[in-house]
Each structure stands twice: as structure tokens, then as C-alpha cells.
Image 1 (cartoon, rainbow, N blue to C red):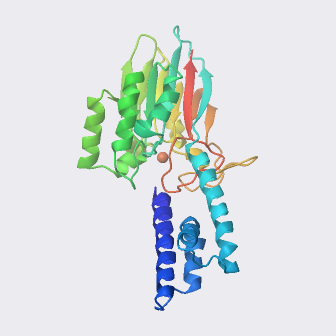
Image 2 (cartoon, protein in one colour):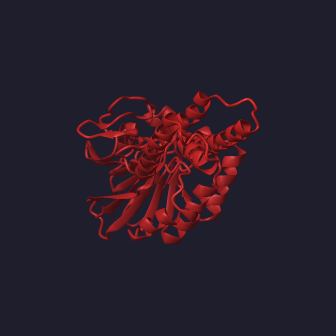
Image 3 (cartoon, rainbow, N blue to C red):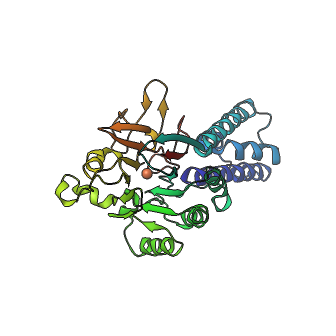
Length: 325
Ligand SMILES: [Fe+2]
């Protein structure tokens, strides 16, 4: 969002500056230096600069404007279209896991939304989820973001999601960072809509146990004795945010664990993998997909939004679907 605001401001400023300079020229007033006008085109305001030149018939005959500004504008439009596609083109990744269930279970996982916008009332995202005909939707944290805390977008998603299937939720590190009255209000609205909070709790069906680990408790993850492992009577499906604590989930008896947090390493380089983890590890061994960790299946969603690094490249937002048998 910061980039969008930046582009709006800098293009509007460029348009105004070109208009103002034309007016100054007509009235023989002090002019705006040409390098300032060009500077605004270079820093993302080329569309505003181009429009300013056309609307006010200004600098159109000067080669350094007539050539440079259109080239910068084409370049900027290409970069904008490329970035939008990279950050908003929704993909679906499908896996199947055999836990010996009698009735198949389709689980849709949503992770790391970070208040990302996918259409009015999140309709684009919700339609894709609906198409998977899920038996349950699990949200593995970071539905909101510590830097843009308007919860409306996240609530739009929840409102639609609960109409599709039961929704189960665990917190991520961003919710932990946001602890406070505003977040509590958001959580109570989620609960009113019917979301089941799974932080350090579990529920049991005839066939499996669904459990969750709160992200705030992971700071103490080495203290395994604080957690009572489940017995082996039923398969355990675990919801958590951070995949790097897979040893804890295994210790708890998880057979299938859903996580996110890594954002696919932000930029996926072919042949090398995801560039950087949230812990600033370069080319982390695991950054997406499904992995076998000592018999436990660990799903790492690339997630849907961004936080500190606002750009994804070759790393499209992802809805994960797991057919559990
Ligand atoms: Fe995240």
C-alpha cells in the first residue's frame, strides 16, 4: 500500500509542477529547474509528468523531456503491471495426505493474508476458495499486519469464509505484535462471526484431533514439557504459524501440520529457491510446499500478502488445498 500511495503522490506532484511551471513561464515568474521536473519523472512520477506535458503543452519540443519522459512512463507502466500480476495473481496448490481417515477431508489453508486486498469484499479470493468445496478452512496466522492495522479487509474475508465452511484460526507473529484493545475487538468480531480460535487448544472428532499452537507460545518452544503430547489413538492435524518449530509439532504428536510465515522467501529464484526467510536466512532449506519431517507432513504455505518486504517475484499468492484421506 505504501508504494501505491507513493505513486499517487509523486504523479500528482509531477502533474501540478509541470502545470505550475507552464504558468510561471507565461507570467515571466521564477521557473522550476528542469532537473527538478525530470527528477519527479525518474522517481515514479513519469505518468504525471507525461500528462503534464500533454495537458499544458509544456516541454514537448525539448528532446530531453520529449524522449526521456515517455520512455520512463512506458518502463513504469511495465513495472506496475508486472508487480500487480506477481502480487495479486492467485494460485492454488494441491496436496494429498493419507492419515487413514474413513471419510476424506478437504482442507483449504489460508495464511499470511496481511490485509491484502483481493477484490471488493475479497470476492476474488473467496470465489477461489469456494471452488475447492472445502470441508474446513484453516487460517494459520498473520491475517492482519502490524504496519497496516485496518482490520476491515481481514474481516471482509472472514465474513465470506464462514459462509463457505467452518473456519479455524491460530495467531501469527503479527497478531502477537499487535496485542491490545483494537486487536481484542477484532478477535471478538471474528468469534461473533463463528471463527473457532485454536490457540493452544484442540477439538476431537470421531476420526481425528484438530489442534493449534499460539504463535506467542513459540518463544518458549524449547520447553517441550509445557506441552502434553497427544496419544496415538487418532491422527493429529496441527495448525501453527512458524514452520521452523516443526520439532515441537512432531513432539506433540502431529501427523499433519499446516504453517505459513515464510512468504515463499519473497523472491523465488529458479534453481535456487526462496531468497530470504523472515529470520533473514538466505535461501532457507524450506520455504514452501509439503515436507516429510520424521513421519510428520509439514505444509508451508507461501501465503497471500506481504509485510516488511512489500514485493513478491515468481512467488504468486497461494491458496493451499490438502485432500486428507
Ligand atoms: Fe506473515
